[in-house]
Length: 163
Ligand code: PNS
Image (cartoon, rainbow, N blue to C red; front, side, top):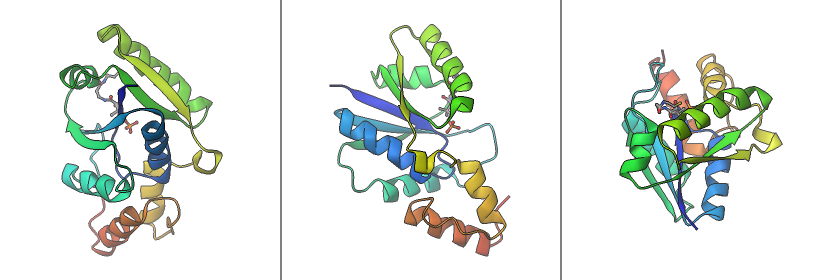
């Protein structure tokens, strides 16, 4: 079995991300969780903060490495000698974009395969952007994100630092 790559912005990690990573960690020998250093949108949490939040949220898994990358995913995969990307699919609406990315990545790096894990129905509506929006206006996101993420969101908005 292989070591696989779970890439994302993780700004912040949600229970949906944790579910996909947990399942990849059961199905494969190891998982490299790769945080994109420079997401297209200004992140709420810095790269170091996102790394810390993932570490705190995945400490129950023993075959996980948490890393970051800048630039193209295919270059990072090549550097790390990884040939399988695992991503979560929440709904049909995710499929079109994910398919396009998977096919572009395969065109850029033949031999790089993307496998999709279907989201648990209980997390299908979850996204980092919605979680941030709800938290920004004081909504309760406990139970939707891992406890360290919940604490960080509460702290960030108490400090009034959120964008
Ligand atoms: O959590 P996200 O925001 O859905 O993650 C998207 C991510 C980081 C996996 C994707 O944007 C990505 O791979 N970016 C790296 C740049 C790249 O390789 N772009 C070409 C892919 S078609």
